[in-house]
Each structure stands twice: as C-alpha cells, then as structure tokens.
Amino acid sequence: QVQLVESGGGLVQPGGSLRLSCVASGTFYSINAMNWYRQVPGKERELVAAVTVGGSTNYADSVKGRFTISRDNAKNTVYLQMNSLKPEDTAVYYCNVRARTFRYFDYDYWGQGTQVTVSS
View 1 (tube, rainbow, N blue to C red):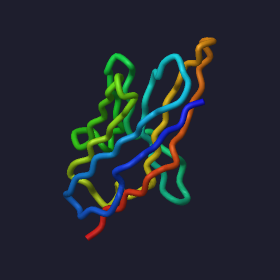
View 2: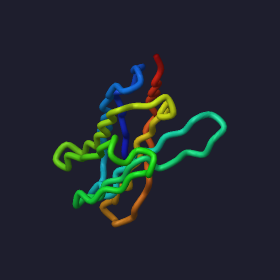
View 3: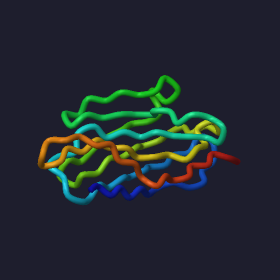
C-alpha cells in the first residue's frame, strides 16, 4: 500500500506562484511514474504534468512554460512549481503515482487532492 500526502495548495492572485508537494510513503519496491492531474467540477480529470523515474517530463499544452514538475527519488516526493498562474488554472490538483510491489505488480495511487484557486 502507498499513501500520498499533498500540500501547497491555496489562494493566489493571477500572475502569482504556488508550489505543490506530494510525499509517497508505505510499502513498495519502487515508485515509477509520478504525475499531477487537475479537475474542475463538471469536467474530466486532466493530466497536467508527468515525470518518469529517470527525470523525463511531459506537460499539458496549457501549462507548458509556466509549470515545472520535478521529483526527489530519495524522498519519494514529487513537486509542481506553478508560475504565472491564471484563473483557468483553478482546480483541485491530484498527485498520482505508479508504484511497484515487491512481487513486481504495478498499481496506481491517488492523493486526496489540494485546492488551487487563482483569483483577484
């Protein structure tokens, strides 16, 4: 089992910055992909950014150049640095990881979500 604890959400003015963190704990062999998703009411959850265990990253077009995903493998932590925030970035942000068990099965886990509100 893997537990994910997110932090860093809140209220920020347009143009401002926030940094989200997500720490994975529990019993697992390894953490592979680490991702950030977001969801607004009435819409599907969308992938915002992804980072592989090797550090390769991928971003939604809407956040390229403004958001940066990174990870600290020693701490089993993934970060999302969000700059130049826009009102349309307002959403609940979810951490998602794919963890491998000691029997080499892969499972996806989700955090509880953290609210990000961009408003003046």
